[in-house]
Each structure stands twice: as structure tokens, then as C-alpha cells.
Length: 269
Image (cartoon, rainbow, N blue to C red; front, side):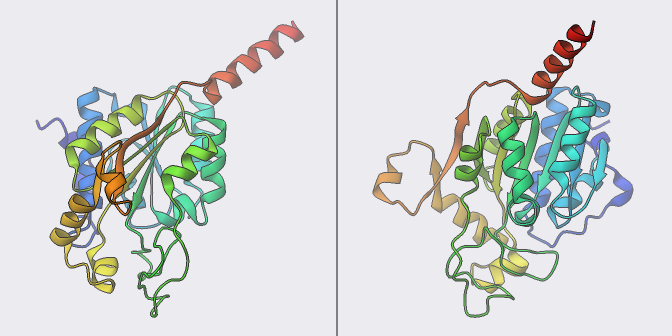
């Protein structure tokens, strides 16, 4: 039996994503990474909110929870506090991560709780009709910005780093092998991990912004991103760096909580 096939709920296929959507690549990479790591499916918990990316949890044959819009990290925090041994993974889109879910995002990072946040950044609200998001950026066309957006975008890496996440990385749906390596690092890291994945939405973002279909959008990721530390970044500041930005070991939240309980128990005794 294919070792990755058992990680998905085949009864829910074919999936609901549009042709060319990068979310399928992320799902494929995630199940392969978990399989290659040898993790017991019963020890993996996938939590998601609402949106195209949130459907990932429903396709995974792990412990899964499909929650409220923007509250995936809040639910994930409760799950991790209840059972710290679980590998908790949270696939999120623009809104779940940094719009309605933005406050939960920065505080999960601040606490350094051992959760892996996968931020699928397609720069648009795909499921609800192509509205612009906090990750769209200046000059982007969307159904709610027919004359282009005047809002600057959040930088996921900078927000995660500034809020205290102890593992922060970025890759793209084009760089699938790199994504697998970074995803494994993120899951193995003992602390709050953020992996931003730039992913194409040809139906809304690509069409509205004349970026073509998925092949052209993936080519754009190839041409406009470079590894962290590349000399090309000084030559062309419009290029987007990929790789690991933060990797440090600090006290993890559930470990600190267990120590607090131990101290309290000792004092009462």
C-alpha cells in the first residue's frame, strides 16, 4: 500500500480546489512529510478555520478539527495544552492567519507554543469571491478593489519574527522539495513554527491581475524569489527571499506550564 495514501480520506475526493490551485501541492507535501517522518497518524492533529486552505484538514486522515473563521490557532492552543504530545498542525489562509485571526497569530507566537502554522499565502480571499486580503498589497485588483488596492500588505515573516515565533520560514508552491524540507523542520521544531507558502490562485488572483494561469504564476515564483542571503537581493530589492529566517530554542509554552503545575503541587504538598 502506498505509504501516503493511508494519510488521506479518499471518500472526500475529488477535492474542491480549482484547477491549478497550489493548495493541492501543499496537501501532497504535508502527507508525504508526515509519512517520511514516521509519525503515528494518531499523534497528529490538524486544525483549520474557514477558507480554501482550511479544507486541507478535512482531507487528512488524522485527528482533525474544522473550526470557526480565524479561530484555528485558539482551538489548536487548547488542544495542545490538553495533550502536549500531539503534533498540532494548522493550515491557514490570509484571513485565518492575519485578518480575523491576526490577534491569535501574534499571541501564539508570543507564547511560543509548539504548534506548526502553515500560512498559505495566495494574496486573495478565494472561497468567498476574490476579495482583497491583508496579504494582497498595493495595486492589486480584486472584486472588492476594482480600481486596485491602496492597502500595503503584511509581511508574514516580519510579523511572525517580531511577535516571537522561534521558527520562521518561507517557500513557494513551485519549490516543492524545499517546501518538504522546511515543513519537516517546522514540525520538528519545539516551539511556535511559521511556514509561509506562496501559492497560486489562478481563478481570482491570477485572472484579476493578468498573471496568467497556474504555470505562469508558478514561473513567477521561480523568477521572483531567491534563497535567503542571495547577492541578488542587493541587486534587486523587489525579489522575495525564501528559506529560514528565525530558528532558535526558547522555553516552550506547554513545558513551562507543566513546570508551573509542578511548582504549585509541590507548594501545596
